[in-house]
Amino acid sequence: MSKIKNLIKQFLESSNDIISELDSKVIEDFAEQLKKAKRVYTVGVGSLGLLAKGFTTKLTYLGYETYFIGETLMPSPSKNDLLIAISESGEADYTVRAARIAKNLGATVVAITSCPQSTLGKLADLNIEIKWKEEIPKEELKEREGELLTPNSSLFEIVTLMLLNAIMSELTNKT
Image (cartoon, rainbow, N blue to C red; front, side):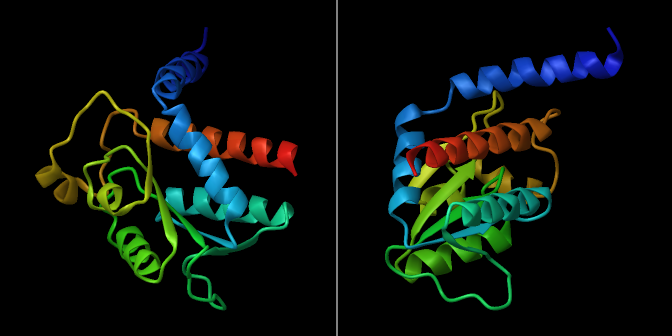
């Protein structure tokens, strides 16, 4: 088998391990929050921002009123709105600031992170934890923001993408 095919196989196997650790109740709660949201906002930085923006776009296909934080013509979040904040470390300044503002304005905040002990994880109303084998102490999170938290850090993106696509499928089947 080629080296690249072996890497793909490793990603799939590792993803399956991570997916088996996802909390089904939290994921169902997330889907319910999406169904009842008046407006849906997403935020993330870097490649996670692109992932969030893609999910935002897909939700519009289902008739949701959606906004990616940072767009120009965007109303402020309020009660009955939902913010989905994606940050592997849970310490990305921009993402945490957006979540704090949305929460202060009355919106529900859903965090997708691998560090529930992070600032974002503690701020969120609902925390979807993409579990890693490595436990990172709270005091190290901020200083490690922007670096790969694990050698296979891209697994966080892969699993998050699969999770959001599965949610889309569920919403599509229920509409």
